[in-house]
Length: 437
Ligand code: AMO
Image (cartoon, rainbow, N blue to C red; front, top):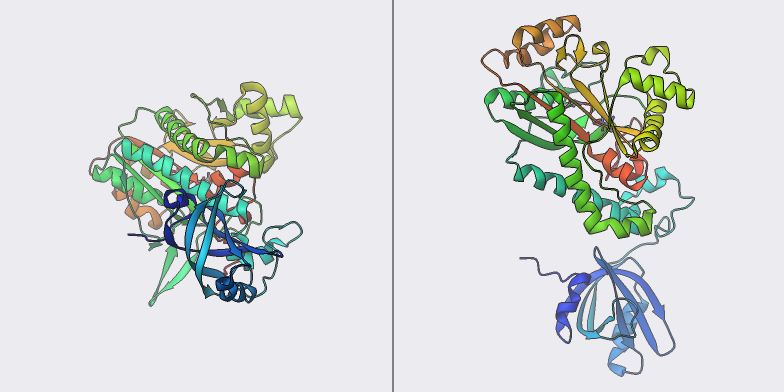
């Protein structure tokens, strides 16, 4: 059992003697009274020390010798006092123990304007004390909780796949190699092959929320070398339309929960409205999208990206989604097979996969998978994939139901929900130039 009473639970302890612990948020030393504001993850509360009471001298001495951001454990009585702005409650202490002393902080986390992002990340645990950054953590957790709840309700099984793997997964182009005793191993780029193995095993519906590693030297506001992926895979689908339909439900479940629990706070602190979308999200073929972007915005996809998207195209796709469909989301379909992984199904040459764009960035790739062994072998050969995928191809030799799935980038979800960069969003950012703390 957790004994710590949190600020948002104090209402249940009016007129009771309790022990309260938290950070010292501020000390306001007035002529007749000292107000100490205490803080925990759920809010702030005022502790009042009257100077006229001689018994309080020891407590005043302790607080005079204590810096803001130290932590304290206080024996106190909880009083209701409507004159107190912070929740109409005050704590009257009888004893104070300083449980940790704070040194002078390297920056004021309440005012991060002008503080270099690298300094913030060097001291990320202080950066997170900022109210907005703390909210971001809660919002991400809430979004994932909503999505998980939806999947559990639909009888999905949560799995945990290995991140240390023997062969480079998916494409082999951007994997981290690690020393593995006298051999080599790689860090998984995606649980793709293993979630499909679960389908071959007959598990029907699985998901995983776990890290993915990409050795891409890209310094953008949306790429990390390690990120958290919300992956799922399910069997007995008729088409990739079933996959998109499930993703709509999943995102609606997550966003509904976030809106209900944090919608107002997000609007207040980030100025962003949480918009719960309605089904179906608009879908557009890549060819038609190129035409629209050309006609409306004079944008032409560069030659090297034909058959695919780039950052500018994603930004404009969001604009198009809002202007033409009054939607924040847009599915893009009919990508060129040459630009997509070999495990996506093709039907008469048309790729049965999609990307989902939200607020100007790709948040998901998904597809119906090629579950027919011979077809899959052919696709892998076409891509020049040999030994690395041999083990994977075996999964489809002994019966495997038609299936599909997708992966949503968790960091991107939070980032776009709150209008942040990925460095500000990840609990601890990992990029080409950052491995610490
Ligand atoms: P993909 O490579 O498109 O697909 O990745 C899926 C989603 O993961 C997120 N993402 C990233 N987030 C932060 N930094 C990165 N470097 C990064 N790379 C990707 C994005 C992206 O949409 N196996 C397939 C998924 C599937 O088909 O199920 C895959 O990995 O939000």
